[in-house]
Amino acid sequence: MKDFMQMQIDVSERLYKSMIEDHKERLRDMAVWADTSVSLMRKLDERDKEIDRLRAEIVTLKAASTL
Image 1 (cartoon, rainbow, N blue to C red):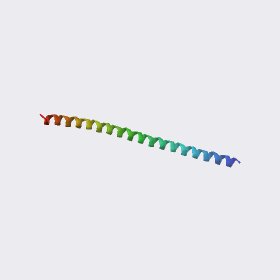
Image 2 (cartoon, helix red, strand yellow):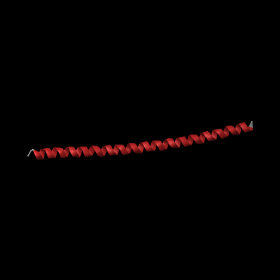
Image 3 (cartoon, one colour):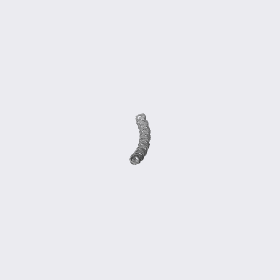
Image 4 (cartoon, one colour):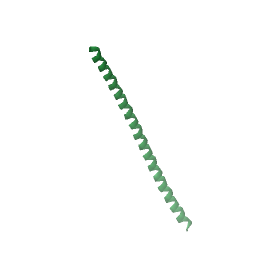
């Protein structure tokens, strides 16, 4: 009976360690997704600013060509 109890404890400890590793891996994956999302949002903001700048330049060039 003592061997059975020790075996159950060992199995429980292995499961617990496995769950800890799984949790760490999930946290790493979530951090990667978060960093990727932040980077993409920054690039979209830069793109939008460049589009606004180019639109303003087009307006200026059209106004200058009509003079």
